[in-house]
Length: 505
Ligand SMILES: Cc1cc2nc3c(=O)[nH]c(=O)nc-3n(C[C@H](O)[C@H](O)[C@H](O)COP(=O)(O)OP(=O)(O)OC[C@H]3O[C@@H](n4cnc5c(N)ncnc54)[C@H](O)[C@@H]3O)c2cc1C
Image: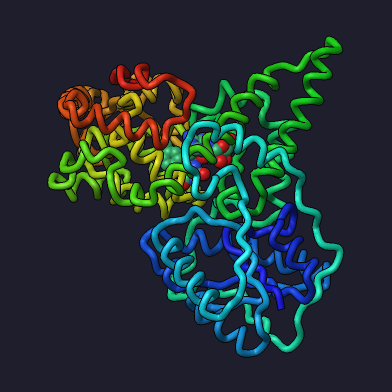
């Protein structure tokens, strides 16, 4: 019996482990609810809801091929042992996973069990992340070559082994979770994933490059593929192939003198984000410790001992007194998605203005990002917190972001209704309204909406001074060289990176 282990690859389309296993003979398609993952601090019942929706469709698709999904709850080695006792396993097939410490340690236990029982583990890459990469030199080319390869052919028929109980989809309560009360989440499954890809490439994506940064336009103009990529309802290779087809078609139109609007520019910007996806995941693959430790140890001790619980609580509860920060957090509480710039601003505010260490804030947001992808998440958190030592220190102004990204307050008023009647000119800093203005607008600061938790300019200057005090140390510079060699994208020279200045966005 072949076993295909579905993890963050909840699809039938372009699934090489499934295609190759089915060629060998009877194939059990397995999904395991692992208590360690489900009980972890990064997991939320919204994730489970998305997974279960995806499993439902996956099972139906497998059934249409005469296969089916078998569900188990437990630790993977125990599940394998029980299956092996019923029907010996010839090989375990799965995609490589660049996960967190929990999945990394779990994989080591699975590998040991398989070795001890002389069962082969055929692990197959699923995106541009390269295992045991020796050097970042040439990584981009290797990634491009991998993604150019043909898509896996969907098996025409699956021979499902007999006599193995199917198990069933597990509702949250059965796993000790409470069902999510979020009602505005993306739906899991290959069908919604493909619909989202198609609508982006043919309709929604035209103004992506100019509309991606504002939380007003981003929900529609961004691809919204992150959740589908994170849980594998779509393969990165499928997305890249569809993108290249679309770009080819648009270039032909352009060359024939037809108008193509902003499409080609937007799709170039999208293509580079897809590459960032793999670039950031490769960092965690190459250095799993960055889930917990500063990428550059020169920044150790900077924030660890100054954690202010009241700052953390105000940030989590969207009560910082900065309308854009609070609106973004409340949007996440409802939708579990927000665009890149607003994620970066939320983290910049937590790490610089509130001087919170990135680890607790990253864990909090992992539960509120439906697209939680450890490799991107932790690498981005470190980048936006200044602890990589190689990136420009970007401290976002929560005041400027209102003026730049939501000048008429559409987004803020929607998510922070207590500010609904505050005039546009006061929306970035409502505490600056006079008492008469507060009374007129029906929003009294301190009663209906909190005053700012810290003063922007003071907090910004303090953070900048502290970051640069570390950055100019010889040890920090030496460490930056190491980080660039190990993780740098190779797009810019080292000297450019090391001279980067603080940017206030
Ligand atoms: C602090 C922080 C944490 C983040 N955590 C995650 C996470 O857990 N999971 C996740 O998928 N993305 C994460 N991102 C990256 C980015 O914000 C999201 O990928 C993007 O907003 C998802 O929306 P979209 O699919 O519409 O993206 P689009 O803008 O349409 O981009 C297309 C795809 O490119 C990739 N991508 C886009 N921007 C980035 C980026 N900056 N870095 C890496 N890949 C990118 C994603 O796969 C995305 O689906 C994080 C960003 C920050 C600043």
